[in-house]
Length: 269
Image 1 (cartoon, rainbow, N blue to C red):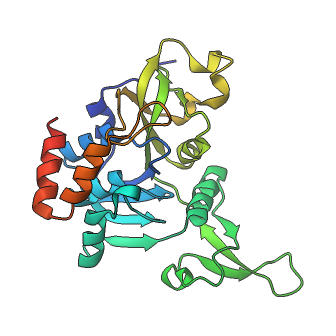
Image 2: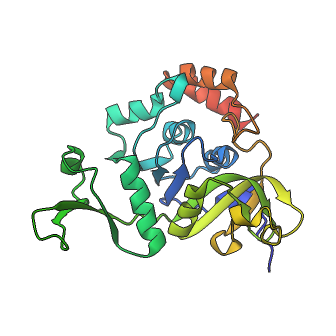
């Protein structure tokens, strides 16, 4: 097998302007080091789709002007407050926002993973979201003899999935552990780019303890070493969040000037 290891800059360079970029929720392994590199490289017109929510990562990319569209079930900083740059962009109408739900987003990724055009979902029925999402179709259940409406959620096929893991090897195998939604993102996406806390010296698929939680190299295009690559977010139970940095950001993001100042500080740190 050829090596899929690259530098962080080379990995991020694989994300083209205008890409449909899938990013995970804060608890799944957010590639923050790659996010800062995206901003340094000045990518433009990105279309974010969150799996199923996002926080700091999306807010930074939106505030830095990289995002043209976002599909999400929610963007917030959790206990630190609102995602102010997202909220400002929403109020200004400066980007397209496709409102969604967690089950609908997971269903869309799973449809793409399975290679089918849609998956049925029932929980959206009765929601006003249906009026805002003409691409979600309500049909009669073809297997029912009595009226039984069902919603069809179209497949979501990202151009690129980007996330962070604890371990990867040079072949491109990436250990996702119990975070199986990361495997779904990789299966659904045309390309998958992974940053890792550590590079495993061997082949993860040959380790009987690690192999069951490993995403095979078949689904991974590039891996890059990025120790503490989720900072200032925490990572699993290994690295705590930087409460001071996140609190500072939540306050600074309320002002465009203070947002620009803290972003510049973090980009050069």
